[in-house]
Length: 209
Image (tube, rainbow, N blue to C red; front, side):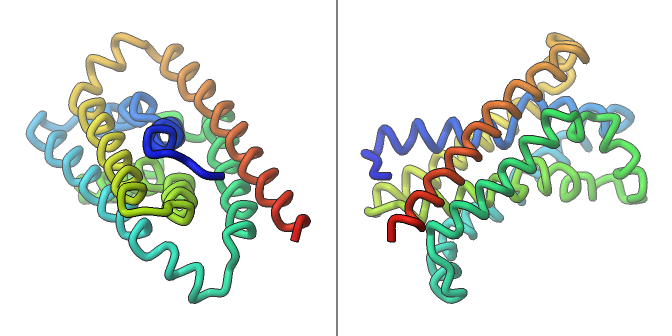
């Protein structure tokens, strides 16, 4: 699949936006940090976004070398990545990313700042789905401009996520529990469709060899 820079930006932006789900993640964020001060909430949000950006960009930079080192073809990775994306989508559709599903897990951590690492940075902001998308898009990048577009898109989506986290209380109040749940499931369906497309493309290429 060959992209021109603008098409690459649109494809990458939609993919990362659906996977990261800034609005859904903000609902989780406010649920986990509602008892903390605004200053601490801001620190956790910035830390989570910073960790997510570092993780995704790192995989963008070493992804191709990693695939070559492990002797894994891009088509095989497409299929595997598609399956991982589908699992992420299934969890979104079934509500496993809802605040009440993650709240009990986060209480195991005495240090509230660890929320920035789990579940915010991983698996919500930079989980298997986002990492897979980063590897797939950079593996298909042909020029320095393509790589720049992918990395810029990752940063843009994470900035949107940061804004959503900082305004989480207002967003949660605006959409309400039902609205947040509906958004998460709609995005899950869209992500599932993209996952199936990844799998289909990979299988076609494998059997065409």
